Length: 343
Image (tube, rainbow, N blue to C red; front, side):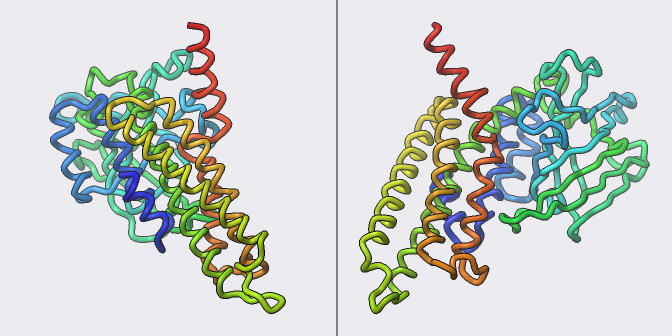
């Protein structure tokens, strides 16, 4: 997974790694808490790409503070028509228009004092949108829906990763069948833990994306330095350029090997702390490496016609999504390290 993600990010589709990350997150959540029927229903479809999914966890007022989400899921109907009505707004829902299902975290306990213990995780089917934005209305009887529920998506324009197409999605009485609550009755109130199981691997994937972007930036900078002649000599002949390229190569290789090591740990069911560490380190390193690659290009590094400008803006977001650096260091890494020392 790490190797495939790196190659996608290194290639012409910089955001391609996200196509792996989203089904990976939902798959891990289903493995952590899904019923056997739910696993049989969704895992084959995710594996074969018959179903494309997006993740709807973040809200306008709640990003890294996932426990505070306000989108609600309220019980409705009985028997075959039993389900949940979703109300509220999610944001930064990547591939939200093209997705066939959303992995949605919602508050099923109206008592907000329960915090993360009042959250549940749903697989929310939706029509596939063809345009940039979208608006859907449910018909009565559609999967047991009472009818009239709406889902509207507004695209969020970004400076980089433009191929991802993130959305703010508003739900008004959108019906989800009872069978789509991950874990069914046993999963109620367990959504926070299920989605965290998914995001642990997502952080490792984001680190792999960062390695791919760094590698692409390095290769572009090296080739430009060989081709560009300044003061009668190729840029690559100057010692400062060689020092830059050498430092870039060292950081990329260190980041790659760190990612491989954590991948090995996670394959054995370990490495939760290390996944946050590698994500925090490698994504920050990608900002520096892509900046240096742009610097070697000189003025042309700022031109959109050269790929290095895209690598630079793409790298910038990696330290933000799938867990911002500051949140990972404060709430995950430092907390675990302090707890281990206290023990």
